[in-house]
Image (tube, rainbow, N blue to C red; front, side, top):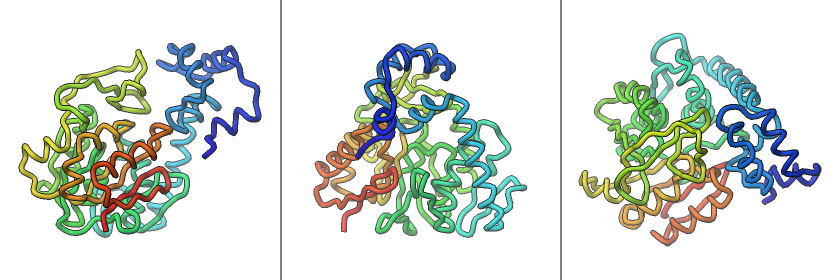
Length: 316
């Protein structure tokens, strides 16, 4: 499939000098400080995702514009479905979550989570320009499922699953985000178990970045000036073994490119339990192929569906 970058480059004449100059003009922070290296990467078409391209084409202020645009759409949806966001708790028909609109840090997560998680789950509202819903076809939550929410962030998907009677293990390694996740967990104390650990293909420690766009343990997606912190990492197989978890029914993963590492460390879990999978597959250009191969190697019985910016998988 032709990327946005390839379409753009087909219309414009690009050179390293032009790209570097544009980077310096339009980027801010670590992007500007690493302009020359990033310019060489971008000239090759090595964008981490379409947001990178959007920032390159239109500048860092484009992110603010996109967030404002999404916020207007989200507020219209809350009004259309008569969901009250004036209280501390936002009540949906099957679940509830904290009102994260009142905090600058969590507001963006609430906006994007409303489009990708809350409204698709509550009212089957699916917008074509979002990452896509967490459930599709056979890949759906069922009561009493054991759910692994990998990259739980604010815990919006955890709230959806807990509201439907599931037991949730919410994995979130970013210390700045965990207090918000705990607010969600407090609404379902018996069902949401918070795990402040990153999932990978090894056990031990890793460095995680935390900037305005991404928190990741993947070195390929890190820049030298991004703030980092040391976090614990564990394989899913080891976590299941240590905690004597007897079944895993559903895995949702949005962990900024580390999905492939998570799957490498979950081979036994996929083989034994055959959980339904809802995994983001847009962080690297080869994500769809790599993730599918890892799943098939662990359990050939899986059926794979690529739709929106996700990979959905289940065993019939």
